[in-house]
Length: 542
Image (cartoon, rainbow, N blue to C red; front, side, top):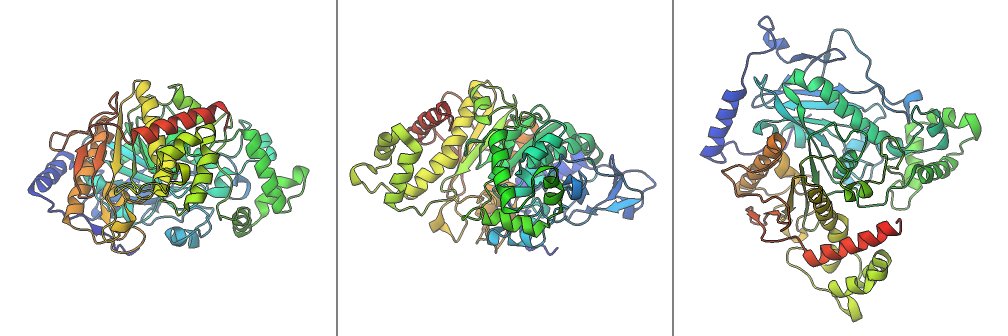
């Protein structure tokens, strides 16, 4: 794969160079065995067999396309993932595997969609040096894409500099859309734990289990695993904190996403939705249903899933199945029963934005806020025919409502609950627009080039990045990697990131590439109202 992304400047500062040399000196060690020749220097024995990776430019190694489960095809379509079959000889792991089956939803996922396959349960391990003398912290990344698109492959991960901060990066693919979240009574009946519909989450748990079993062979520490993600990946991270795997990892990072975004239905409701979808595929009744559905082609199912919703977004998602997700995630967090681990969480100022007219926005607010609609309309300047106020940082009134209710305030609410449960929380706000696209503000996914340290001139995240962006990326990667190492992002060389506590302070990564601690909470009036609306909706079971 041609790599067109610019790596961050290695000469950001003398301090960076010195730090890099110190890291290399601390981690460098001999290869696997004295008898290994140069060609076999990046060979590892996993629990399933030998694999051969490739040296990583600038140091370290990459192992791309490692199976962590059997291909979920045939009888394994809509089935709990099963361990991969072992193999003889040495398996080459030098290229990313296919993305999981997905329709084209826009330019952002076109490449993944056009090369996607149901045979997709593979992961990638990227190490900063080969081999480290001491076990390194591990970052297991769950990609975004609304749980219907995207992949764990790409130059963002392969050429980025985040691993150079002394962490092992693991990315992976998981089943998406209708293949990842299809519930049906027949599937529930055949399942060992009498559940269905959470196959994507089962894949994520299987990937985590593989990491626990194997990462020490790559120099990673299975007792220091951070699970993190962006957008749907952040939502799934929150779900895993309430799942049967909640004791399996040690820290969490959630970028622009929480499990509070939508109501997660019980299994029975998900089964009913699955039955309705099966009807659109002309599925026979009785025992013939599953063989028929598993015999349909990938494309037939994808086309039916897209056609099922006029917004081209399959109405299929996680459910409370009693096994993977025992309870509603919002209730678990509200009760302080989630994973008792450090959490780093935040959002971008504009996120997805909104093109709603004032009239449609008022209607949406009334529907969402219910009895609190008058307060909401007043707060956003829309009462009595008001036109709202544009904010220089947070955008139009429609942008503000969208980001406040979908990303920013859910994140601070989750942070508040986690803090009340006596667990460390660090909150951030990302303000920097993609250079050259300043009018759009800090959009959804805009922080990813800085977190992973990979800048592109083209594509959805492409921009006119400068040395100032390189400096900001170095700061953010230092914070993120130190959180992975210790559960606290702070280092003496950078501005102090206050813990989210009674003052609800956060770290702001500003438009001019600075890192500054706030003096108080994010949008206190708006997020206070959001929490009232959330409590109202939870009480009503919405």
